[in-house]
Image (cartoon, rainbow, N blue to C red; front, side, top):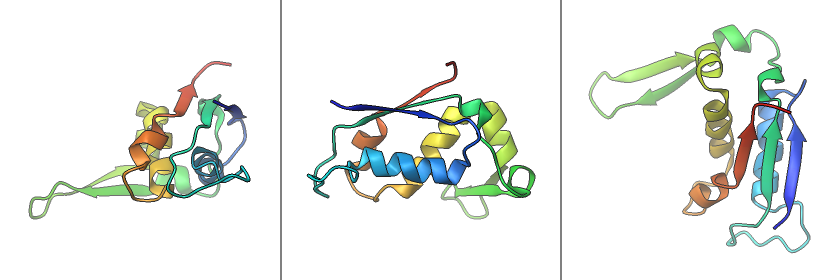
Length: 116
């Protein structure tokens, strides 16, 4: 099983997440097959040093609906990042992966370390 280490220092969140999604699907390998989950582990470190462009950090909002009438919840990017940056990265990467039964298995191979 191959392991790829990515330093998140001074990388934008979206470009970092798209790179991770590419590796988790094994699209960087010549033997890529879309119906296989892949075997590459991705290790991300220094996530606290990721950068946000423009005013996204203070203005971008994420929405989810609880299923009840009028229960549309919203949270700012700054709140999510300060509370749990690992969870935010996994959420962003999950939205970039194909929406099928392989998504959970692929996300298990994403490992986030805060230290060096």
